[in-house]
Amino acid sequence: MTKEEGKIITIFGSKGGCGQSFITNCISNYLAINTDKNILLVDFNIGKIDSRIIYKVNENNIRTIFDIGNINGEVDESLLKKIVVNFNNSLNIIFPPLYLDNLTAISDKNLSKIFKKLKEIFDLILIDYPFNLNLKDNSNNLTEFCDKLLLVSLSDLISLNNLSIIINQLSDSINYLNPEVIINKYNIRPSISLSLLNTVFKYPVEYFIPFDRDVEQLYLEKGPSYIFKYNIKIIRDLSEICNNLIKELF
Image (cartoon, rainbow, N blue to C red; front, top):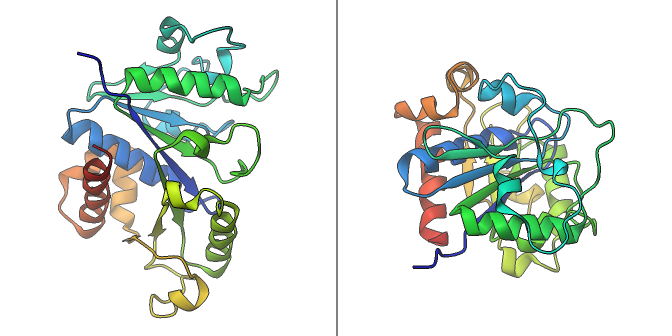
């Protein structure tokens, strides 16, 4: 029986520090633990060591998607296996390169080939897509072949205005991407009150995630999977996002 092609979720943030990677890691771990899906997390935060620290990976010279080079014909699955790090709970990760020296850009054509092959291998691919990569840039525009787009933002004035600009940039593809907005850390200053949110930001907000200092500490010390041992609001909210994604995509 032929495997059904995998799905791609791209998670994009309105600015640095909005919690986009936190949410991406939490969703990836929850789905790896609580479903039978083979999950791949692709971290595009180039030059950042965050995910290596979170997952306690001490090897800085892990091969990355940028090491594949130019592709003639189809992608060899053995090349992809060299850049995927496997974890025990069916979670797999492609880490970003740490060093920018001699980093070779990936063409749209090659990137499309890579993700086409990854979709043959994995059931669900989550892409942590940093805010400083232009969604409208003709190169490496991952929204062109994703099945779902999640937009993460804080609820301060700057973040919400950045998010409005991002959504305007996506106007040509807004219908098929149907992005869902996640407002993170809505309960800390300088957040705009929820009652005034609609006056600043005109796009519907699907989810609100509170900030919880204890959960963030557990996330950093024990890892994203550990936080789901607790039944508190932030965990229930994150679990709801995950369960709704599974219902929608499968």
